[in-house]
Amino acid sequence: MTGDGTPLEDLSAQIRASAPPGRFARLGVAVSGGGDSVALLHLLAAWADRPTLHVVTVDHRLRPEAADEAAGVARLCARLGVPHDTLHWQGWDGRGNLPDAARRARYGLMSDWARARALDAVALGHTADDQAETFVMRLARGAGIDGLSAMAPERHAWGMLWLRPLLAARRADLRAYLVSIGATWAEDPSNEDPSYDRVRARAVLSALGPLGISAEGIAAVTTHLREVREVVAHATLRAAQEVLRIEAGDVVFDRARLAAQPAELRRRLMAQALRWVARADYGPRAAGMAELTRAALAGSAGTLHGCLVLPEGPAFRVCREAAAVANCRVATPGALWDGRWRLTGPDEKGLEIRALGEDGLRLCKDWRDQPRPRAALAADPAVWRGHELVAAPLAGMALGWSAELGFGSGAGADDFFSALLSH
Image (tube, rainbow, N blue to C red):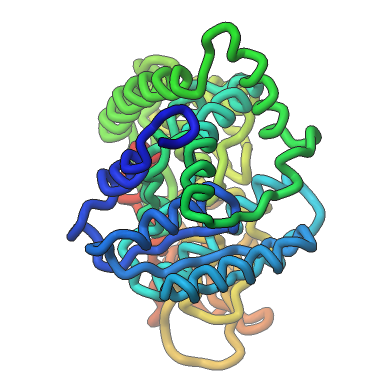
């Protein structure tokens, strides 16, 4: 028996429910060296009928102990006969929210790693305790149902399927399991640092225990919220299909139809439009978005989140703001520009992809024949050779060049609608 009396076999059963034999041929496992992920690896490696495992550790190079922890995982994998890779993050510039930046970098690195190895999915070691701590942190930030609903047992993101097979397991049970098999793990010293939100949330949960508020109880609540969130998400998708269309990377709303939607659906649709056009991980702050939505519904223009809202009779358009892409440059045609566009054409040297801008637009004699307004076209990608405009395929100056939304990167029109259901 482990920690609170849960049979050891229940831990393995939880994982097998997520990754039953035959479902995956090649499964990635993210192992930091901490107790949760080390337990996940041991449980998976013990199966006789397990998929082929590949283990990855991300060293963010933010703690001196991290390299030793990664080396420890490598030694464990060697003993288990499982291939292992260590990835390194070098992108921290000292600005912004470090935990969030590290998380996004970690997933980006792991997704690239997993696709390069043709893995079917990547398993993560999140537990019921992580679920409860996340709930408390998001509650403190005033999150809505998206933030307060449970972490998903499965999620498609960053071009990969992520599994959380231990969401019903307690952290103490996993460590008791490791002790029972004589395994060791590393303890991150930041887990005791009260300057971190998660550590403070852990302390709050401990204090709430006498009131009967437990990780299991919070898990039940977050699961109910997730069910509510799924209902709202499907309603948002149906509304999107009725009130908007995608046009060359812009989102065009029918004002009257959008105004007729419930406030929560209007908010979600506008947030998704701004995120998608700006290729941003997050939407803007609620107050700014509410003000922009009111202005758009009243037929006024506005800017927010690197996007421009333009009234068009009974509709309004959400497009990229030219100022937001003025310094966006790609030296290799075919590469993703502004996280959304791929331009392909004749193989020539010395070319660069950058925004068309007002100067370029004046060189496109047929731009007025295009269905999109001047301000939207000015923020589109164009092909340049120094100061010479070579092509502007979205502004009527193709000259053998084409521009397509970068499908597979989350920029395609289909991704706009599918993202309304993801969380």
